[in-house]
Length: 98
Length: 230
Image 1 (cartoon, rainbow over the protein chains, first blue to last red):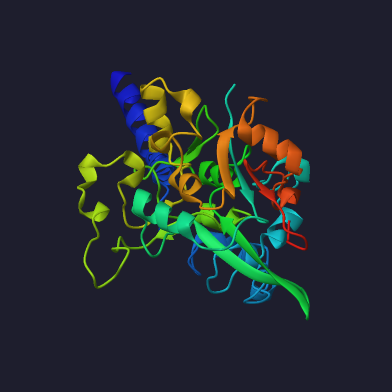
Image 2 (image 1 turned 120 degrees about the horizontal axis):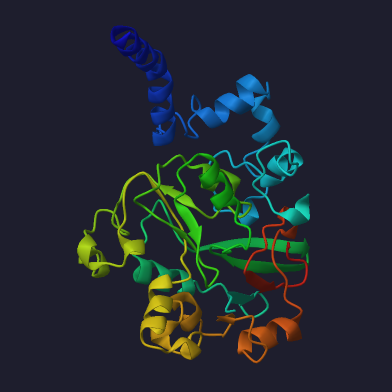
């Protein structure tokens, strides 16, 4: 019986190991994965999962550049607001916009 | 409650950039991550045109989108303190840049590399101070997001000295950009105090915030020049 219990505990530990390691790697939030790089998580979600064209966000080099520090491929945050104001999506913006 | 706000009067601003210089010196900012910027644009139709000078630093929003994004990636490097100041903890920042991506004002900047303010000319006076001797908000790190802190080191000093009533008045306790303005286009103080100068002037000038449609509740108010973008 003792052998059986020991075997059961070991079996459970082996089975749970991948899940535990996955949780740990998620907690570390590697910058490589969560980055704004073209192959990073941010662009992957928007272009692969949501099938958005680059041009949906990167409409022009100008955009609302007057209120932002000029830099390449500025995205007008107004485009973000079209989606990110509802409860079902990650909502960055405040309650007034909802 | 105390809630610090800034008032910027576009009608007074002449675009001299003294506020930018003061910030650069006070906060050791690096070329890739300016904490204070000047945006210029023209409005009107020739011959009736005018130039708008819009200085832009962190809005220290009441509901900061940068913090929401940072929390969602699990870094939790951005916090908002009891004075309403939004701060980034460089030791927790993972350099993902999400804060920069979601800020409606394009404020946070990812400091890819810590370079001297004047590349090729060596470190200037302030940059020679060792990291350990600096305030935590001035301990620059590569691959870390940075932004204006409302000169929180000065606000902390005011608290430590028991001089919170001098915030917005004394050089030692007021953000450097607000102190140096030669035309008094900038003002800093407690909006929750109805008798404070900033509070009175916001009311008197009907000052407003920029890009209110994002609902982030910015704590920087602007007296808009005619035709300027809100």
